Image 1 (tube, rainbow, N blue to C red):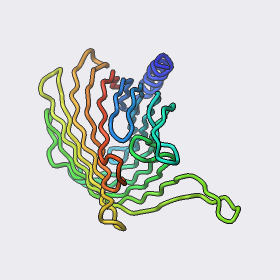
Image 2 (image 1 turned 180 degrees about the vertical axis):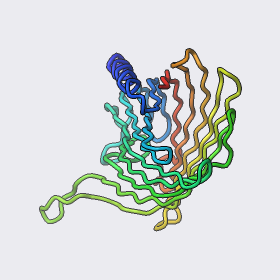
Image 3 (image 1 turned 60 degrees about the horizontal axis):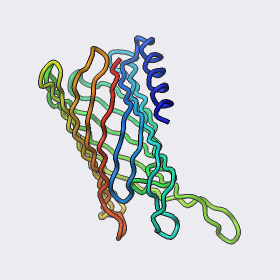
Length: 253
């Protein structure tokens, strides 16, 4: 399975590198997840940005995790099974004021059994981005916006008719990210995202991530990262926090 990810990683890197309009980053990683569900897996992640003009850009991003893990069956019992977590999305961003304000719209779909999304969640974001600090060694920005999410939980029978079991909600979203270049080889990044459900005050979500990267060559680097996802609405006896440690080989192109 790891060989398949490595081949996909190298192929996608070479393909995108051939198109000079693109700037991107791809990862191949080994991941340990602990929380409501535990898993040891391998994964791949990519983020590619295409600048149409000086003020307009589009980004395609995605991730995929595959491995043997613990999952919950319909009765809440923990069982061992093959588990897949994935996310894919696109984002369009328009600069309003150079090196200061921009507006964006984004759509993504995801499935994450580690965090309670057992089938699929679709989310659409719209908001603004503000560059707080931008320099050669330190960058810091913040985003504020609105998110609409539609969670598909599966199908159920109502009077003998199959109907989709879905839940829709709205969030106020705040996000900030800071990145610092300590020297020519070492850099770090911190990010925090908070989502407040506008329908249920006790259904807030937040994600925090810290990462450290070390340059190996002009193209490749090694990155270690810690991500914590918090879901305030997780019912007992489930855990509200899910943590992910990642060690990844990163290609920048």
